[in-house]
Image (cartoon, rainbow, N blue to C red; front, side):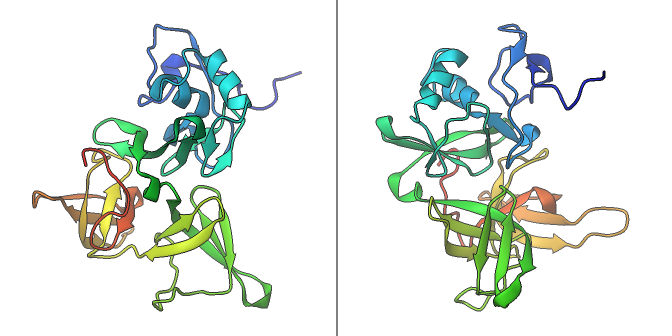
Length: 248
């Protein structure tokens, strides 16, 4: 009888390059479970605890710490050491009174950045699509797997929710706190590709054509303009970013 399903293990050589693992340290690595983020854009919670935050020396110790409920992900206790921690997720260690956000670092990929207390109460989520429900309700579906049902198709400012926009969400109650449109003039962060980690103001958006994807032109703080694929761009503020970024 043939094997059913995918492998439950992963070799270190096959792990994403931004995982903080030494290929000769061990043959195997923790494989993240299926979840809100794909493996190529996430890091298992046990690796986060042991290799990035250094709150555990080994995977076994990290598993024990996580199983005791000592770690929160997006405001809720998470006991799954294989949980995939991805873009904009918040990791809180209550005993250490510390909160970290998963963000892209220039030229390196995803890693954790410590954030202040006033920023630890919300996350940014990319709107994937929206669905009309019975009773005039709207279901907003986000790239991190969460959904929010609302009766308002537009914000208090009259702006309609459009896929590609960013929504500021209070955690863990999932209350909508703000809305950032994906448009020229907004502040954006590149979350994948050759320009990962770079950020600046959107100065141009070119729609997709039959032969190529939509692209975005971004001007950084030094006045330099670069272009990247629209799918790699994440709006993080109107005039300036509302989250802390590496190097700030």
